[in-house]
Length: 445
Image (cartoon, rainbow, N blue to C red; front, side):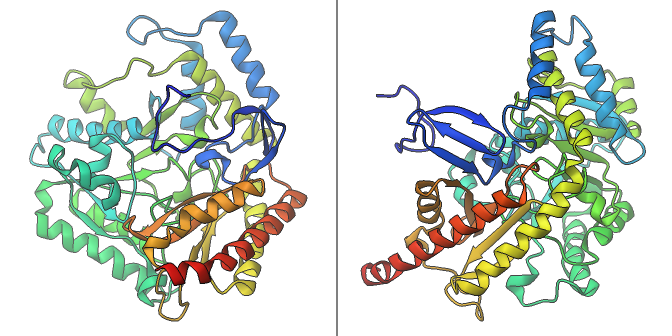
């Protein structure tokens, strides 16, 4: 019996240890971590450089409340983080995770608006589908009805615009006109809401779990930046999943040369070694807030020295081992392997992503893009088949969380070619096994 409860009653094996890209349960069975946990463990498990940094910090202090002390660990990580940002983004605020970071970004944006006499601005426009966290504030900007609907009476839902899913809409993702088509929906929404009421636009540069590694069409990100500038709207880039090198750049937005006003970080930022997240903001946003009395926001573990020591060591490993370049190189190889699997398995209707943030989507018909019947719950079943074969992958549903099953394949950035061979071979077997079950599912539908 377990005294824990999470999403459901299902039980999993007990974790014994993890090294590199592999994990072992207490029965000695090995699993390849093909999703980096929840796209978290960017540098793999049990890296000795990070563990040594954490041990050293533990010998000095494991906690120092920010109102009582500054800490060397948090200052070093803040400096190292700012050094990796676009010019001018040099003020860092630490939190414990992605949901906290998203809320912090929105609250900073709002307090800046108040500080500069723009108190009418409070709406944060986001996309649908999207996922930005599980707190009520983060859910308010999340477009994923299966997660938001139960709590709708408890929150003030923010305006949404469609995510740029060109592949579903039959549009050419390489044509800048396609990107402009989706970006212009943002401008139309700003104008419909009243520009004086719109505070910010929040988006992921490459989609995460809600859209399955959706890469925006050409011209989209650049046009979004132009629109935000034209209407005085802040651009908040949710880099929780894309940040820290996963897409082949330190920030996903770098692929389009777009400079956000606020960057949101977590997950790969500390790579699973400690709970850590943060926002990085333009100094022009922070100084008016501090002048007006300070940022009315904070968390007990903000800037925790142990977490910050882990995060700083993670950044050092990413740089020393060239993991950003490796993400691009290994990502291209893995994407080619997923495309080979698509050629062999008709059930795969699309392969997409950037770097080592990759996904494939199941479809009943590639031509019509029809999803598998939702009652089959293919996203759950396939993950279990792969897990039973020793491969961990991650799944969600692309179409508002209701249907459109996709599988995220996002191994740690340290992955090497033989391990990609293992991922491809196991996925191939899992797809074959899953396809063998489909006739029975049709009969029972």
